[in-house]
Image (cartoon, rainbow over all chains, first blue to last red; front, side, top):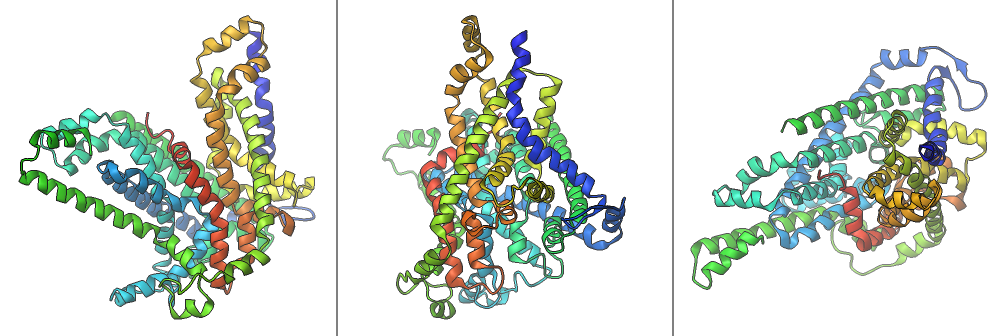
Length: 289
Length: 293
């Protein structure tokens, strides 16, 4: 069929854009990662030196670990909170649409603005959270939310969970809406409690929604940059220093394009690995249920 | 209330029923509980708006309470010195340009991908999926270098193409799924009339794509409005900055002044909040597509 072959011509504009601004940059990153390059002038070939530096110092492996740890806690909390709201709102149709839109609103605000506002909420002296705690008589719980190395990463994570709880909630509500109504009704007639219906009837049918929500939030969370960049600048003491922050600091603070490229390749491998594993595990689980 | 609940109400009628009463109380408690939680989730936004109306002395003395009066001075100051209107126009212009590129290139590429299942099309879909998962900060290093070589730094063309490449994979996925669901008989009829591929695409397929294009345009707008790394590093000319970068440059990153920060934050967020207020259903259903098999 002749028209089939010419049909491929339609892909050319997209391939050009993707080729020049995505595929070629990835190849270039790979090449640059074996060089010392200041951004201008000539790049010097240094072989595996950049990678050797990454793997011989704790600093960069720690940044990779912070990235992974942060992603795990954010994705877990975000999905639990979204599922919690969705499970309840599914049973309360009167306020469902309003609540879904209200919860979704924070994700419309940019990371930059969210980070600025929460920086004020977290500030130790006059910050909204500590002042509120004191006024409620819970002064003992006030913290240096962003300044304490043990707490900072959870504070940043909490901000991100706050932003995207509405997102996961909307996905789970769509999942609930896809469950045939007879199933819930059958459970009610059998005298199953709300929790039993959720646990044994609804949760097993939410497979596709869980897959979508976990995959999207994981990919999204691995991309985290703005929140720690503005909230903590990677501090205190490297507690929130993720690979993203390392890359940008090497790039535009120190003009180490070669080293930043090597870190980018490490990040890319991490993203690919996570996406691949997740796809496998979640799809398998969905199929066996 | 679901169908089952209302039917019980009808059966028991006006007769007093302790069970029903208990259910009612439980239900209103549940409503109150959830609404309280939702309001708590919105408090940071309320805080942002309240703070934007306070003078600096008020912020120091009363960091949490309502502002004494609606003090507009902060907004006047922000509006006059952050280049707000200019940056809103920049963001709109960039948004529209990215939409044009992404819609055309995306819909065109999706047509063969939806119709032909081959190794080549699978490979392209895989590259697109990889593009979707890759963080901005991974590609910014080489893009910066490429842009300098090509003279694209600090140009509208450059930022438009860079953003288009970010959202093109999403466009291809949206359109491919949608086109695959269009009955092939429509095309076959046109082919019998001797239409070529382009005519079929333009006259048969394209007119059906409006709903996807609308969702996609909203997503592009949200990204262009909120994205940070690309415009921060690729644009330096004050007259070309997008909204978030002008907020960032106005506020700064050290020794932040709340009387500057909060009005800038509100001004920076208002356009998208309005967009969300009008198109919330479309935005949320677009974001949650794929949750149900």
